[in-house]
Image (cartoon, rainbow, N blue to C red; front, side, top):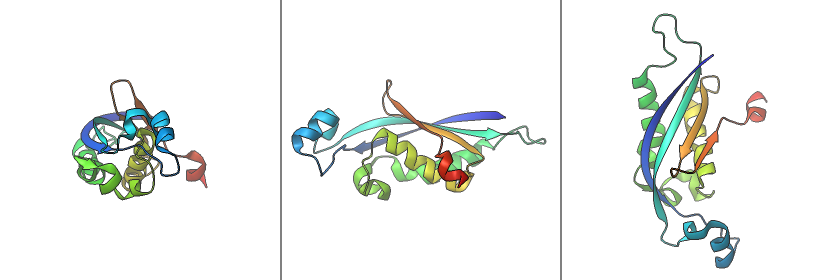
Length: 141
């Protein structure tokens, strides 16, 4: 199997917060990320596809096709948005980098399929990223 990874960028704001916790607990757990006004990041998204390259083209997927899918499913809906408010999935779950990776996987796997999409990695800062490769238990069921 061969893997191909392509990188994308988007900027977005979010707030990490749980209504079930007190202000003090939120501050202790999420630190400055619990700021009531939110804060922003310049995210780097790495999308990895895998499989056997096509015999004619030698590729797993044409870069224009992958770019289009990622743009339509992730970049356009997320870029310069308040994730808590403007992305439906985050109206019910905290937009942590871990959850952002899972939501992006869910959006991409609908188009690319679990056999083709190998993993997504979302860099929130130069030191922090989350990687998600699907839930193999759910996919094999």
